[in-house]
Length: 256
Image 1 (cartoon, rainbow, N blue to C red):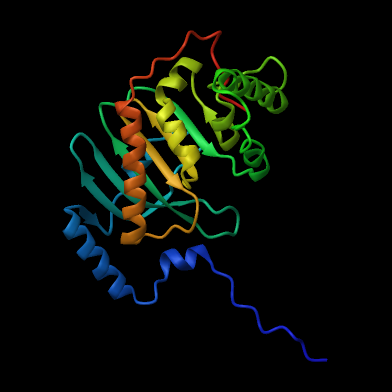
Image 2 (cartoon, helix red, strand yellow):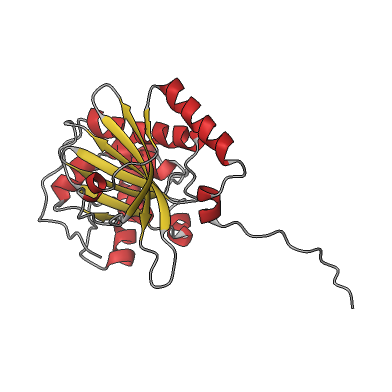
Protein backbone atom coordinates (compact mmCIF):
# COMPACT_ATOMS: atom_id res chain seq x y z
CA UNK A 1 0.00 0.00 0.00
CA UNK A 2 1.43 3.35 -1.04
CA UNK A 3 2.09 5.90 1.67
CA UNK A 4 -0.04 9.03 1.73
CA UNK A 5 2.88 10.98 3.16
CA UNK A 6 5.57 12.59 0.98
CA UNK A 7 9.24 11.99 1.82
CA UNK A 8 10.18 14.17 4.83
CA UNK A 9 12.79 16.90 4.33
CA UNK A 10 16.28 16.07 5.64
CA UNK A 11 17.22 17.21 9.11
CA UNK A 12 19.88 19.88 9.54
CA UNK A 13 23.26 19.24 11.06
CA UNK A 14 24.72 22.16 13.01
CA UNK A 15 28.27 21.11 12.13
CA UNK A 16 27.39 21.15 8.45
CA UNK A 17 25.83 24.60 8.77
CA UNK A 18 28.92 25.97 10.49
CA UNK A 19 31.70 24.30 8.50
CA UNK A 20 30.37 23.45 5.03
CA UNK A 21 28.82 26.52 3.35
CA UNK A 22 27.39 26.11 -0.12
CA UNK A 23 30.07 28.37 -1.63
CA UNK A 24 33.21 28.63 0.55
CA UNK A 25 34.79 31.31 -1.62
CA UNK A 26 31.72 33.54 -1.57
CA UNK A 27 31.38 33.05 2.20
CA UNK A 28 35.02 34.05 2.76
CA UNK A 29 34.67 37.14 0.58
CA UNK A 30 31.50 38.17 2.39
CA UNK A 31 33.27 37.79 5.74
CA UNK A 32 36.29 39.81 4.60
CA UNK A 33 34.06 42.56 3.22
CA UNK A 34 32.09 42.69 6.48
CA UNK A 35 35.28 42.90 8.57
CA UNK A 36 36.65 45.75 6.44
CA UNK A 37 33.35 47.64 6.59
CA UNK A 38 33.22 47.36 10.39
CA UNK A 39 36.89 48.14 10.95
CA UNK A 40 37.56 44.79 12.64
CA UNK A 41 40.59 42.50 12.32
CA UNK A 42 40.16 39.02 10.84
CA UNK A 43 42.53 36.13 11.53
CA UNK A 44 41.79 32.87 9.66
CA UNK A 45 44.49 30.90 11.55
CA UNK A 46 44.74 32.11 15.19
CA UNK A 47 46.37 30.45 18.20
CA UNK A 48 44.07 28.75 20.72
CA UNK A 49 46.53 29.23 23.61
CA UNK A 50 45.30 32.69 24.69
CA UNK A 51 41.69 31.48 24.89
CA UNK A 52 42.70 28.41 26.87
CA UNK A 53 44.38 30.69 29.43
CA UNK A 54 40.95 32.03 30.39
CA UNK A 55 40.20 28.71 32.05
CA UNK A 56 39.09 27.45 34.46
CA UNK A 57 35.54 28.27 33.48
CA UNK A 58 32.38 27.54 35.46
CA UNK A 59 29.97 26.40 32.74
CA UNK A 60 31.98 26.90 29.55
CA UNK A 61 34.20 24.18 28.10
CA UNK A 62 37.99 24.39 27.78
CA UNK A 63 38.68 24.77 24.01
CA UNK A 64 40.95 22.23 22.34
CA UNK A 65 41.03 23.75 18.85
CA UNK A 66 40.26 27.04 17.12
CA UNK A 67 39.02 27.92 13.67
CA UNK A 68 38.71 31.62 12.85
CA UNK A 69 38.99 34.77 14.95
CA UNK A 70 37.76 38.35 14.77
CA UNK A 71 39.06 41.18 16.96
CA UNK A 72 37.27 44.49 17.50
CA UNK A 73 38.19 47.60 19.51
CA UNK A 74 35.43 49.62 21.09
CA UNK A 75 35.63 52.76 23.23
CA UNK A 76 36.76 51.10 26.47
CA UNK A 77 37.00 47.40 25.65
CA UNK A 78 38.34 44.76 23.29
CA UNK A 79 36.20 41.99 21.83
CA UNK A 80 37.41 38.68 20.40
CA UNK A 81 35.01 36.43 18.50
CA UNK A 82 36.41 32.92 18.17
CA UNK A 83 35.24 29.75 16.46
CA UNK A 84 36.21 27.27 19.16
CA UNK A 85 35.93 23.50 19.33
CA UNK A 86 35.25 21.27 22.33
CA UNK A 87 35.94 17.58 22.78
CA UNK A 88 33.10 15.59 21.30
CA UNK A 89 33.60 12.48 23.44
CA UNK A 90 34.83 9.04 22.54
CA UNK A 91 34.52 8.44 18.81
CA UNK A 92 32.67 11.74 18.22
CA UNK A 93 33.89 14.74 16.18
CA UNK A 94 34.83 18.03 17.81
CA UNK A 95 31.87 20.29 18.56
CA UNK A 96 32.04 23.90 17.25
CA UNK A 97 30.91 26.94 19.24
CA UNK A 98 31.05 30.69 18.59
CA UNK A 99 32.45 32.25 21.78
CA UNK A 100 32.80 35.96 22.61
CA UNK A 101 35.61 37.21 24.86
CA UNK A 102 35.48 40.83 26.07
CA UNK A 103 38.10 42.59 28.17
CA UNK A 104 37.38 45.77 30.13
CA UNK A 105 38.65 47.39 33.32
CA UNK A 106 35.05 48.30 34.22
CA UNK A 107 34.19 44.67 34.97
CA UNK A 108 35.05 43.94 38.62
CA UNK A 109 32.85 41.12 39.94
CA UNK A 110 32.41 37.38 39.42
CA UNK A 111 29.34 35.45 38.37
CA UNK A 112 28.43 32.81 35.80
CA UNK A 113 25.01 31.93 34.38
CA UNK A 114 23.69 29.16 32.14
CA UNK A 115 20.22 28.96 30.60
CA UNK A 116 18.01 26.34 32.19
CA UNK A 117 15.73 25.95 29.16
CA UNK A 118 12.85 24.56 31.24
CA UNK A 119 9.65 25.92 29.65
CA UNK A 120 7.37 24.56 32.38
CA UNK A 121 9.16 26.61 35.06
CA UNK A 122 9.08 29.73 32.88
CA UNK A 123 5.39 29.35 32.03
CA UNK A 124 4.55 29.12 35.73
CA UNK A 125 5.98 32.58 36.26
CA UNK A 126 4.19 34.30 33.37
CA UNK A 127 1.20 34.90 35.67
CA UNK A 128 3.23 36.86 38.21
CA UNK A 129 1.44 40.10 37.23
CA UNK A 130 -2.19 40.18 38.35
CA UNK A 131 -4.24 43.09 36.99
CA UNK A 132 -6.86 42.66 39.73
CA UNK A 133 -4.36 43.60 42.42
CA UNK A 134 -4.23 47.25 43.45
CA UNK A 135 -0.89 49.10 43.20
CA UNK A 136 -0.63 49.27 46.98
CA UNK A 137 -0.76 45.49 47.38
CA UNK A 138 0.96 44.49 44.16
CA UNK A 139 4.54 44.64 45.47
CA UNK A 140 3.62 42.59 48.54
CA UNK A 141 1.81 40.03 46.34
CA UNK A 142 4.84 39.73 44.03
CA UNK A 143 7.12 39.16 47.01
CA UNK A 144 4.86 36.42 48.39
CA UNK A 145 4.64 34.69 44.99
CA UNK A 146 8.42 34.85 44.64
CA UNK A 147 8.94 33.35 48.09
CA UNK A 148 6.49 30.54 47.36
CA UNK A 149 8.28 29.77 44.12
CA UNK A 150 11.65 29.69 45.87
CA UNK A 151 10.31 27.25 48.47
CA UNK A 152 8.84 24.98 45.80
CA UNK A 153 12.01 25.07 43.72
CA UNK A 154 14.81 25.02 46.29
CA UNK A 155 13.13 23.97 49.53
CA UNK A 156 11.99 25.86 52.63
CA UNK A 157 14.47 28.33 54.05
CA UNK A 158 16.48 28.70 50.80
CA UNK A 159 16.35 32.05 49.02
CA UNK A 160 18.31 31.15 45.89
CA UNK A 161 21.64 32.51 44.79
CA UNK A 162 20.59 36.14 44.21
CA UNK A 163 17.02 35.92 45.60
CA UNK A 164 15.45 36.58 42.18
CA UNK A 165 13.01 33.74 41.51
CA UNK A 166 12.06 34.83 37.99
CA UNK A 167 15.67 35.11 36.86
CA UNK A 168 16.71 31.88 38.56
CA UNK A 169 13.86 30.06 36.83
CA UNK A 170 15.57 30.95 33.56
CA UNK A 171 19.25 30.60 34.54
CA UNK A 172 21.55 28.61 36.76
CA UNK A 173 23.87 30.93 38.72
CA UNK A 174 27.31 30.48 40.24
CA UNK A 175 28.93 33.28 42.25
CA UNK A 176 31.19 33.49 45.34
CA UNK A 177 28.56 35.33 47.40
CA UNK A 178 25.14 36.92 47.13
CA UNK A 179 26.62 40.43 47.30
CA UNK A 180 29.08 39.77 44.50
CA UNK A 181 26.39 38.06 42.44
CA UNK A 182 24.12 41.10 42.71
CA UNK A 183 26.97 43.39 41.64
CA UNK A 184 28.00 41.18 38.71
CA UNK A 185 24.36 40.61 37.66
CA UNK A 186 22.59 43.93 38.32
CA UNK A 187 18.83 44.18 37.97
CA UNK A 188 18.88 45.81 34.48
CA UNK A 189 20.96 42.90 33.18
CA UNK A 190 18.65 40.30 34.74
CA UNK A 191 15.61 42.02 33.25
CA UNK A 192 17.27 42.20 29.83
CA UNK A 193 18.17 38.51 29.84
CA UNK A 194 14.73 37.35 30.96
CA UNK A 195 12.88 39.50 28.42
CA UNK A 196 15.18 38.76 25.48
CA UNK A 197 15.41 35.62 23.35
CA UNK A 198 19.09 35.13 24.20
CA UNK A 199 19.90 31.72 25.70
CA UNK A 200 23.39 30.51 26.47
CA UNK A 201 26.30 30.91 28.88
CA UNK A 202 27.68 34.16 30.31
CA UNK A 203 30.62 34.30 32.70
CA UNK A 204 31.76 37.63 34.19
CA UNK A 205 35.03 38.17 36.05
CA UNK A 206 37.29 41.10 37.00
CA UNK A 207 38.66 42.47 33.75
CA UNK A 208 36.50 40.54 31.30
CA UNK A 209 33.59 38.34 30.35
CA UNK A 210 33.01 35.36 28.07
CA UNK A 211 29.74 34.33 26.43
CA UNK A 212 28.30 31.86 23.96
CA UNK A 213 24.71 31.42 22.82
CA UNK A 214 22.82 28.21 22.13
CA UNK A 215 21.90 27.32 18.57
CA UNK A 216 23.70 26.50 15.31
CA UNK A 217 27.28 27.90 15.52
CA UNK A 218 27.11 30.03 12.38
CA UNK A 219 30.19 32.21 11.85
CA UNK A 220 28.38 34.60 9.49
CA UNK A 221 28.26 38.43 9.34
CA UNK A 222 24.52 38.80 10.01
CA UNK A 223 24.55 36.42 12.97
CA UNK A 224 27.71 38.02 14.41
CA UNK A 225 26.19 41.50 14.07
CA UNK A 226 23.14 40.40 16.07
CA UNK A 227 25.22 38.75 18.79
CA UNK A 228 27.60 41.72 19.07
CA UNK A 229 24.59 44.01 19.56
CA UNK A 230 23.21 41.73 22.27
CA UNK A 231 26.58 41.50 24.00
CA UNK A 232 26.90 45.29 23.88
CA UNK A 233 23.55 45.59 25.66
CA UNK A 234 24.66 43.15 28.33
CA UNK A 235 27.94 44.98 28.87
CA UNK A 236 26.19 48.34 29.03
CA UNK A 237 23.71 47.21 31.68
CA UNK A 238 26.55 45.83 33.82
CA UNK A 239 28.87 48.82 33.65
CA UNK A 240 26.26 51.62 33.81
CA UNK A 241 24.30 50.18 36.72
CA UNK A 242 24.62 51.90 40.11
CA UNK A 243 22.72 49.16 41.95
CA UNK A 244 23.90 48.47 45.48
CA UNK A 245 23.14 45.07 47.03
CA UNK A 246 21.27 44.79 50.35
CA UNK A 247 22.99 43.27 53.38
CA UNK A 248 23.42 39.53 52.95
CA UNK A 249 22.47 36.87 55.46
CA UNK A 250 25.53 34.86 54.40
CA UNK A 251 27.37 33.66 51.33
CA UNK A 252 25.28 32.07 48.60
CA UNK A 253 26.07 28.59 47.38
CA UNK A 254 27.65 28.45 43.92
CA UNK A 255 26.58 24.87 43.30
CA UNK A 256 23.36 23.10 42.51
